[in-house]
Length: 439
Image 1 (cartoon, rainbow, N blue to C red):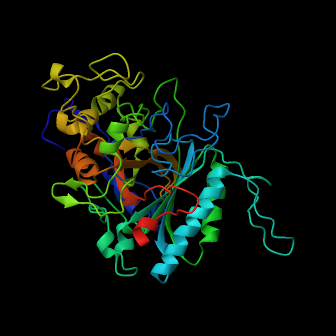
Image 2 (cartoon, rainbow, N blue to C red):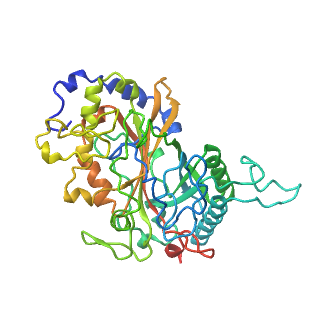
Image 3 (cartoon, rainbow, N blue to C red):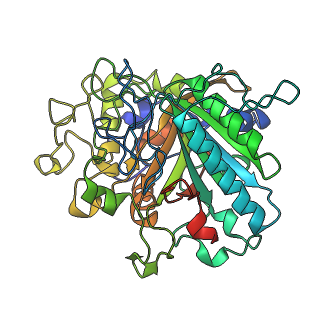
């Protein structure tokens, strides 16, 4: 816990999670199989749903439910970053088994080819009655785009000595460190590649994942996977996380190109604290994935007043405790000593609304998850956190350090995830993911 003021007698009222965590650790392989959790600087947030993806605008009209039918595959940036968060997702980390740089190049070309077709939709190739079908048939004879995006990111381990690209690693990319309050299981962390597969419906996500892994078998192997979903607004406004609170209220707007250039997109030669990015990174973004297990059995026994004190917002409206409406500015200058919004409340630590903190914002695009129960019969659910930023150190890492030992850590527990770098976009039909890196 921090030394900053908090709700009086809060620690005495909180049910202890220590026994729970000891039991969960004993779950071993069961916990690993379900890819339980990882602490992150914020709870679920969704990209600005009023704006199309910058560089990858919606290419078809919206469906009856308001979700876009498809997003353009070609653009300066990959879709799935500023694209509004679809209802379903799978985050799949992979170990690359390609034997050479040439095979790695072929692998990324294949991912590009399959992603281009799947996100556009269409009729699978007819290979005749004697060959295995070219498509699983999960979506019927014609593949709908269904708002599918496949975002491909690379991990630090891809830049080892296998492919001769060690000197081309993005300047801030590294293996995810352990922060205070983390309990990371390295078997479900990191990876050479990450595929973030999102769509309006779960079967579309499953279909795309099967298609890509089938086409690339022999060149990469799944390391870990976590599926997620976005809850609808209830009753309106920003969707809620599984702690019952609205989240994503303070996300930067994807329609603000100036903010996106500063906060989300990397560029060649960019210098932050003397660190210079390599020449191929323009249009990419640092991609953080962390799974947060929410200890809901304990959270549900805490008073509403204490829950709101820890978060810093009213649960029903989403408004800051100092205000009335969800999107009201908490205006900490009116509450300098934390009499209403505690100095260690989550929203105050995550975004203290200072000039420096404005440049530390990241574009959050996480999903809720429900993985059933663990080996001890405890509910295994929470948050699959994802965010994108121009500078990993300036943004995610700085905010994460500020959140160390916040009161909320008694109800969330980290175990996996990783740091990745979302590759620049595919600009045209002859282009492919990773071409500037490997050429």
